[in-house]
Length: 108
Image (cartoon, rainbow, N blue to C red; front, top):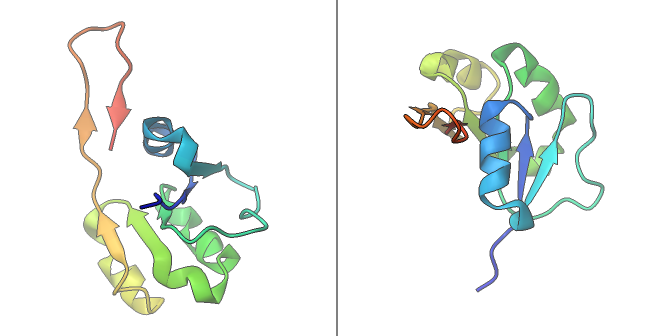
């Protein structure tokens, strides 16, 4: 079984953490960058600030909007409903930190 490639939108702590967990099967899209020209069939994981969401949705081809997975705070419910995206997956991040100050910090 082949693992689908994920598009991760947002290169902040959450986006970077997800990308580094599986860089072989991930494409990281930073602010202002276009979606990959040959879209993959995996999920599109949105790890941006709430005020960037409208631009992200607008830049996503209509046929792929069902694949958007929002990794934001739970305050998005009304926004998702207003943009007909309330059936999309939404996850709230959990902060993970090591007691070892030399270890990397991940936010998921």
